[in-house]
Length: 280
Image 1 (cartoon, one colour):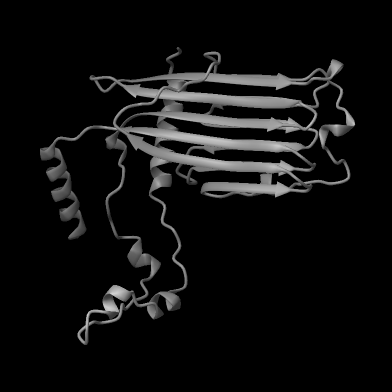
Image 2 (cartoon, helix red, strand yellow):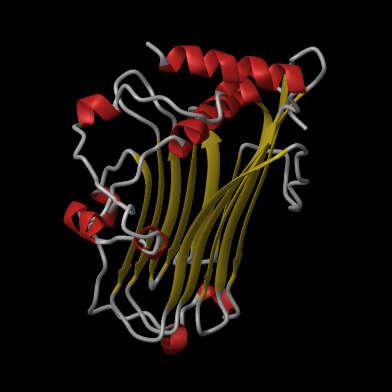
């Protein structure tokens, strides 16, 4: 286990980013469709029943609305797990995995630990890639790495057949921190490749962010976490680019946030404070 300022910086950046992402609003569907639809339980109430009416509200009005959310003072720790894996049809594989655990003691002091692992398996001697690797040199998948999105983005680009790929990101809350549950070194980075460098796997924690990259003859898979700053909002980006057949690829990110247990009195105080803020 390592404890240093850079890891604590990583912890603060990722935690703030997670809280910001959970507060994002989602776009509504057609307003006209909403106005036309009348729930059955309203229309069945008799002659006095009134249809649902909607009123369009400008963004500048919505920007000043407040509600319940997970503030940074509510988070007492978290575990971040990232995993990218690629399985080629010839048996070759690439895996990059990392876990960041941040916990808080009774004195409100933070401790952080990082585990990383990278592994490449190539069944062919010398790392040569046989014809059944599924790679198709005459096709390409590109462009997704140039997309810049604030918040969470998941991009999949496929040029081929019979491929299985997924981008998954989850955020959950609990009163206890789960165990990271991975076997890896207590280092901030890890890398691996086959003999001739055609298959690579790497992961790095640094600059308050995380970067995961897999490269194979049939494409690449990446995961990037960039914390927010005064100039731009934070971002979590997952990208799959497959130019081949019969490939199995997956990007997985799981963030488990530990929330402080609040007494009944503290809950009432928080409710009164939010009510006062809403009257402004």
